[in-house]
Image (cartoon, rainbow, N blue to C red):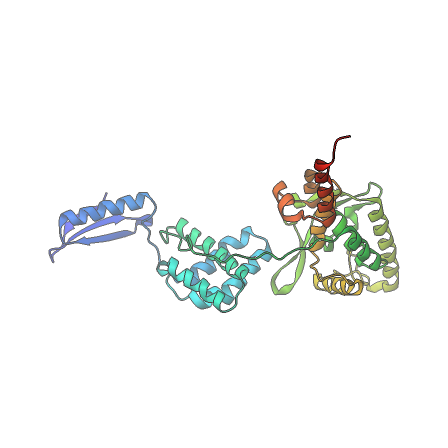
Length: 368
């Protein structure tokens, strides 16, 4: 297909029909040249490289992609992170550009400027996630031919060093937290690796004391305006049932008894939310409140500063050091893959190194 004709000014023209009946006109000095252009355009059309569409600004496309496409398929926390990257960094710098004029060089220079301004590698990587996905969608919509993020040089994100707790340090924390709301929180995090968002969404009906098991069905998730709601867990494998050690069950029972006393004391002010971790009035306990208490406990015990999530890392490592099979640890932690259990959360404790050295020493022992 394609119409070829000579114009009144002597030049030759060819037209090719694109999506939705739109037509693209090609020009050349000779009939042979315009036919070559037409054949090239037809080839590009078959390859999906010949595109058309409104000359929209990058800001319009990014906003549409985030609000109408991406928002429906990601967790609220992911959506909020992407929106911050857009509004704070991407749109002010690039939003005015026509979508079709954004090149790999433009993207690379943008990332370089952000790094020069002091943005972290992780922040720039998040910006690239947003742009890369949005441009991929633009290619699928035939708005552009090539994703300009393809081939850009990204900074290397240095992962925060995690130093898991030793058995002795975990015992120190539990002893120091005894009788407080942090005792069951730390016990569940460091013994069976429950995420802090999952703990704050835990209800008493999720805990089966006679059977000694606990079910994870929800997590506390941040939504707009820094509010939190109880929603679905991180992944499908995050929904799991965990068998609890007897000492942890005892800690939970003691915590429930203290909570009943608080409920009687609060009287009519008590909110019946059935939460395992709540305020003295039964209200939702927020992550910032727990973090503040946890950091205070670390200072009191004299342990190095660490993130609450490091308790989960510690759980996987301690379980591994005790000889628990990786597949079992994967189920307890709710990991989607065994590689995640082995590579991300399983650190090497000094005691494990010592045990390995002792085993290697046997190579040099003389046979009896």
